[in-house]
Length: 153
Length: 153
Image (cartoon, rainbow over all chains, first blue to last red; front, side, top):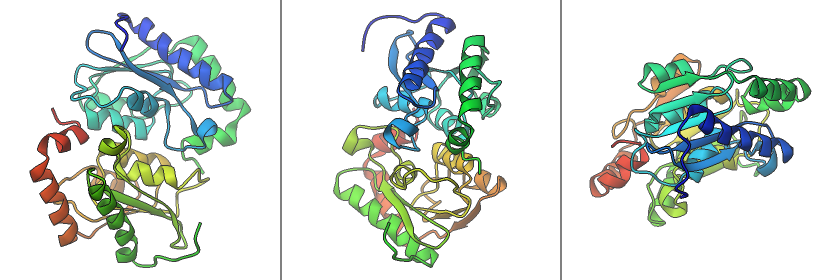
C-alpha cells in the first residue's frame, strides 16, 4: 500500500473516476470505485469488468473491495464510487460495515444508497457533471449491455 | 452446459453441499452454492474462496453466479446455497432478480433471506441437519475467520 493520502471527497472520487475511464477505454461499462482506509490511504481500486472478463460478478465496488485484500474491519473505510451502488454493491457495503460512501452520480441510476445510510453508513452524493455525462452517454449508446449489468429484463 | 437435470430442491441443494465440502477440504470456509436455469439444469456452482484465493469478494453465491457466466435474465433461475445468504449475496439475488432461493441452513447465520422474499424471490428453507452440523462445527473451530467473512469486528 502506498502512503499517498487522498484527504478530500474530491480526491477519493477522482481515483474512482480514473477507474471508470480505464474501463471505458477497455470497451467496458464505465463504473469505477476505490476503497480508502481511515487515514485516507488507498486500499484498492477497480472497475466493472463484465465485458472485459465476461464476468457478471465484477462491479466497480466489488472489484475495488477485492483489490483491497482481506481487511479485519471496514468500519473506518470509505468507498468512493462513480455511480450509486446497486443492490448487490449496497449489500456488500452493509454486510461488511463500510463506514462511508461517496457517490459520484445518482442521476443515471439509483441503487441502495438510502438503505445503506439507514443501516449506518455515512453517504455523500456529489453528482459530478462529468461523471453524469459519461455514464449517461454510455447508457444511451449501450442500453442492452447496461440493462444486463443491472439485471433488467 | 451439461443437459443433466436437478429437478428437486434436494437435488439442487446437494450440488451446493458438494461445493461446501470441496471448500472445507481445501481448507476454506464450507459454504457452497449453485445456480440452475428454469429447466433445472446447472448453470454454475461455486464456493467461498476467502482463504483459498485470499479474496474477500468470493462468497459461495457470488462464485456460483460468476461461474454461471453472463445471463440475459435470472427471473427463472434458482440459487441453492448451503447457508442463508448474507446481505452481500442477498443484494446480488435482489439486483439480478433471481427467482428462487433454496437455503440449506439458517440456524448458524441469518442474512437477508426474508428481505429478498419481500422483494419477490421465492425462498425455501430446508435446514438440513448435516449442513447445520458442518457449518456449526466450522464456526466453533474458526471464530475469527468466520467473523472476518461476515464483516463482524
